Figure 1 (cartoon, rainbow, N blue to C red):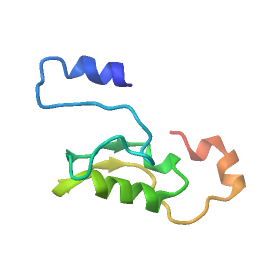
Figure 2 (cartoon, rainbow, N blue to C red):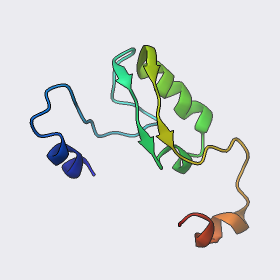
Figure 3 (cartoon, rainbow, N blue to C red):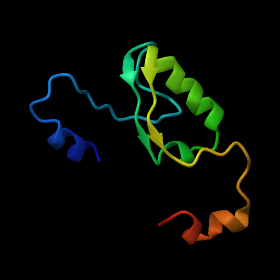
Figure 4 (cartoon, rainbow, N blue to C red):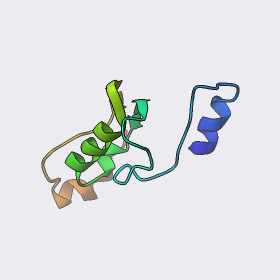
Amino acid sequence: MLGKSRAKAMGASNIEFREGLIEESPIDDCWADVVISSGVINLCPDKQHVFGEIEWVLRPGGTLPFADIANGKSVPASAIANIDLWTS
C-alpha cells in the first residue's frame, strides 16, 4: 500500500506516508493535520487505545476521516469465523 500511495503522491510536496502500527504510532504529538483510516481501526482489538493514539498525533482542529467498522463491544467467535460478515 505504501508503494501505491507514494506513486500517487509523486510530485506532491505536502504529503508524507509513514509505515507503522496504529497502536504504536511512529508520529510525534500534534504532528498531523489529518489521519486517514480505511479498514485499519476495525482490525485493532483495543479501539479506545487506537483513538487515543490518533488524538495524540492530530494537531488541534485536525480531522479523522475513516471508513471502518468501529464497535466497542466484543465480536462473538461465530461472527469472526464468518468471512461473509467481513467482506463485501
